[in-house]
Image (cartoon, helix red, strand yellow):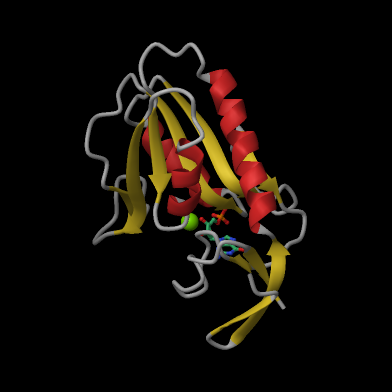
Length: 181
Ligand code: 5GP
Ligand code: MG
């Protein structure tokens, strides 16, 4: 565990240590364990690649109920969809109609990304959608999208890397979270 890391041209310093991150993951898992204790069929966890993959794996291993897990991308493709958006959900393997969905993302900054993803998931008529985020920034959010559960609340408006979060695709593999110096 280093106190500073350099990625390409940028210097980062330690911000949230692994132990604190894992406490946040456990908090999220406990909230979900209460919520889904009596669910009739296994909910579908949908994790947004690449950032949320690391958080998702740690989270689902702490769940005390059975789930399905799928990893998807919210990505560009050629052409526009009917709403004029350039991005769509790629990789959903099965219909999610009538299922309880637990949508997992890495960081909610403006909230526009997760809001659009929630809209796209809703189009497929799930029974319910619960949004879970690793990092929730209440001071930068610009939408009224509901974040049901989060591991860590971040009050600083700054760029961070580690535990799934990247700078130009690097830094995701760090166990701690670092902030731009
Ligand atoms: P939003 O649409 O909420 O403004 O942005 C969400 C997405 O932007 C996240 O899923 C993440 O990919 C990226 N993002 C936002 N803030 C940060 C940050 O501080 N660090 C990194 N690495 N990515 C961020
Ligand atoms: Mg993302």
